[in-house]
Image 1 (cartoon, rainbow, N blue to C red):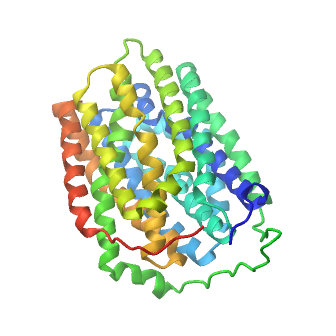
Image 2 (tube, helix red, strand yellow):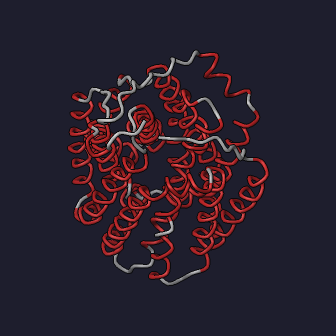
Image 3 (tube, one colour):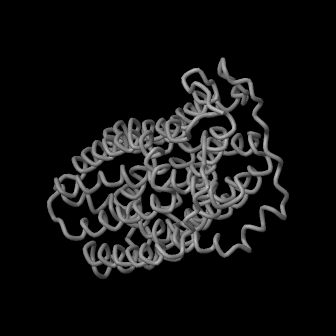
Length: 411
């Protein structure tokens, strides 16, 4: 069933969720690694510990979020819990997290990881999977709705780069303010069925999956091959993009404040491009298939990481950063389409949060500390070459192991 998207209130509420969530996240997350290293003074090894702990906590919440949300389908109880955590992010970062990291690093990591994960690190996967399900049930493509998430992230990053150079605490308070809008949208949204003038068919709500059906995923070989691909590609890329690249990029500037500002502008422009690709990517993925789209996204990862190791010109490095605008829409949207084409569509939240996000986080947990140690000993170039080589090997293996299902996925 197709409904005029512009007239579909579910589309606009979904877009509202995504634009406010990603704006709130960007205001503190886009400069998180820089804040930890330059403002708090953490070493590369300590950065790895922070990211490993965050990912470990995120695993718990992704399992909880995925299974419960699949039981709720379009119920909002889990979203409401997450939105409350988001509201508290500003005061938490300023009055709890920062002092603990400075004075009792391990305690700060242990307390910070579950809070950041519940609100944002796992929350991003939760809201994406929730809106993707809404899009399938109420007649619109997920990509155009996800466009607003990228747009919100880009707009907020543009502002965050300026404010971070003044005082990072301003970013944290603004994140809570935007989270209040997200919280309000969640309070007033009621999923509704809408029909075009020529289409009076009733949208049938899917049956609620049983716990046995949910856990049956973990006995499928095809599921574990998918997990292996995610760990071998997205985990390494995430470490590169979040843990290493922000400080690598700003190291090209003599004045740190100037580096923060330029990085904010570049990140903002990159995410605006990403938003445009979110609209175009569904048509490309539908044409070539989800498997080939995933492989193409992984190839973009290899190119970006390896070029970062090779180039030493800030303008060329800036151009390479924009590859992310192609990789992210391809990977995120292809993951959903691959899951729906190859598994039970009712289990999309579990597949996305566990199969994709937890798999990625397992890799980050295991590898962040190791990569941090490697960086401390060898520097950026060698670390980047090693990461690129690993992703390329996994990409080659995946050409033979990922399922090439031809099942048509219509939104």
